[in-house]
Structures are given as C-alpha cells and as structure tokens.
Length: 326
Image 1 (cartoon, helix red, strand yellow):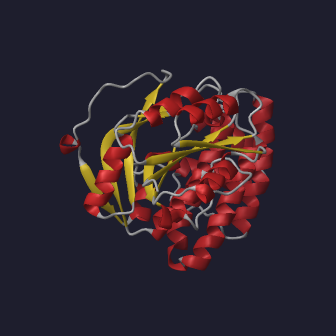
Image 2 (cartoon, one colour; image 1 turned 60 degrees about the horizontal axis):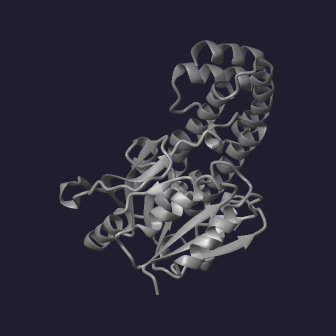
C-alpha cells in the first residue's frame, strides 16, 4: 500500500496535464499512488491521463460526469489508499523533491499537516534540476493554527500546498457547487488541528493560467459562493466552536465580504456590470448583517463606509465610494 496518495482533478487541461503528471512521476519519493480524476473532460485530457497511467502503474484514472473541482477531489479522497494525501491541480506541477521533503518533515516532527511555499510561474512544466537541501530550509512549527491562518500571511488558503494525514481530513469534504472551495476546507482544518509545520521551500509550482477561474471576471455566482461559504462556516463554528465565532466573524467573514466588494470592481471592468454586481451584493450583505453573520468589526474606515451605504440601500453611492477608494 502506498504511503502517499496524490490526487489530481482533471478537467479540460490537455495543454498542461502531461507536465503535471510527469512532475509526479519524477518524484524522488517513490512510494506513492496518483489518482487522476477526469471530471468529464470534453478535450483529450482524459485520454492523456489514461495513456500515462498505462505506462506507469502507480497512476490510476477515474472517469466521472462533470461535478466540479470539489467533487473530483472528494472522489479522489474516497479512493485514496495512502496514509497521507496530497492535492495537486492539473495545470500546476511539483518540484521533484516535494513529496520526500514534506513526508520526511512530517515524520520528524510527528505533525499531521506539513505546508510548503509556492512559486508562481508563467512557464509550463519542464524538468527541474535544482536540488533543495532540507538542512538549509527554515522549518517553523506553527501553533494556534486557526489564529495564524486568519491573521497572518504565513499559511495560504490553497489546499494544494500541504501534505495531510488522511485521518485528519477524511471528515472534511470539499463543498460541491461553489467557487473558492479551499476557504471552508482549510478553515475547518485549521480549527481542528493543534499545530502545523511550514517548510520554507518552493515545492509547488503554481502556473498562472490565464483561463483560471481565479483570474476570470467576477460574477453573481461568485458572490453566491461567498454567501454560501460564510453561512456554512457560521453554522460550523456555532456548532463545533461557538467560543471562536466572534473571532472568525471579524477575521474571516467580514474580510471576505470586503474582498467580495473589491472584486466587483477589480475583476469586472464594465461599469454597468459593476452596478449589477453591487445590486446583487447589497442583498447578500443585508441578509448576512441582519442575521448577525457579519459586522463592521475589524474593517478599515473606508470599508465600513462602503458597508454603511449598502445597508442603507445606497448602492450607487457605495459603488462610487468604492471606485474612489478601492
């Protein structure tokens, strides 16, 4: 049985997926399985994965109807046989020592979640020959993981930057049908672990794909996702950790609403569409505020003013103010 299960969701990435899988095959740590979940691709992505798996038996491919990134990751977790889990997006790739460094660090410190740094790149996969000496890498043991995650920048939201003990995440599925699915997953994880290890080494290569959801226009569907995430996590914290609700509201819910409103401007250049987004966001914000799920707490004055306008049905003034101060 493999020690590590690498889970790679695949959807219409025929231009990138081969490089992604090559980076997994090139790992210096050999005791892994790679579960490729073809999430209903309509291009050649699934066939490329099938051909690769035929030549390397450590790779398996599961084909399923399109259900989104969360559904594909959940499928991978259900089929994972390894004691440890690693998520890898199919347009990104790994340093050849990634799994080895993360696994050795996990065993050395006896901690079930080990995080690494990511390197942004505009280059597609090519063989990496740079050697990383683990003895020269800064290792940090971070306690109070949730507090650090929400108040510092040391821990990223992305699920792909960590090696996980499977038992720690088996009961934290990714939410289907939303954008930004890493937010609820990582927030719950940070609440349920005591500490995390951070290896200061660029083991994950994050390809800046121009077609990525993260770089596409902001939409009403993305506003709805923020709404669902806040409601989901509010229910979770009220049920599991009610003493932390006010803290999470201040540092997560309120900040995500601020980010949502910023993205209505920054990721949508059409001014009429900006107004339409603000009209939609106003309804969401008013409902969240009336239910006590968001507040002014922790916001800078300029963001408090935007929220104040929206809560008083002054959408156009809120938009003008947001455009002015950004």
